[in-house]
Length: 360
Image (tube, rainbow, N blue to C red; front, side, top):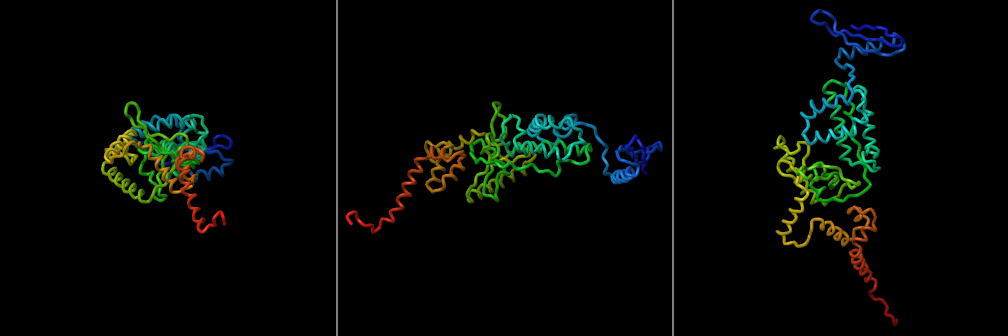
């Protein structure tokens, strides 16, 4: 049963009885609306009654996002997230989200706020260092997940009616610059970075080790993220390796180094290799195979030389090794191009058959 009280010009208070307390007094839900006349207020009352009776009504909450943040840390983050992820999300929330939206009431946060937040990250205006470059896809996704985690907790605690981020997907950042990979990027690969449908591997993050031994995953600087196509035979090997890691992850999930990441190059409990482990492994491999004087980084130069010898277009090679200009590739590998050019010139000898002599 509902009722309407007029509270000034164009303002009405709606009231719906939901039951009675132990003393027989009615328990009500109330809501203030602003409409032009009482007829419209009756329409609002009908909607309000339906929401209350169907259990869809959420009381207005005046808690601000910055006030809710500490509750999120203690009652949600510390319970649901592993320490590394929680630390990363807290850093994002404190530096990126609260400065923009902390003053807003939870009930006032809409999907458009999340969309605008992601758009600013996507176009580069949301960078904290003032640079005009795109943020990496990994950074944008982490910012999105941090924001969504806040709103998911508010939804679960019945502080908002619906999670505004529920149906929003983080944008895909299109990088114009090709790839340059290193051991730091290699050990940061996760199973999600194996793009089977494209026969490629996505490099979007790197892993570094702090002085105290802690391993940190971070975005790739200077727009150097991107994907690298790989041969189908190598893809089969990588996919097989990925599936093995996923099985290990499922079997020991409660003991995993990071329950939210499946690193490819890691021990059985998911702790990724340190970047310097790659060089150490390569040194042992060279010794076993009697390969002298070949650094891990030299493999890059050998691959370029091979592609040149296979007459792969210079532009494709330049893009693959992450040179901004073809001239840079020519400067580094010009002598190899000259050798191939000489071989190409010899093909014209076919036209010299039965050629007339000079005297003729």
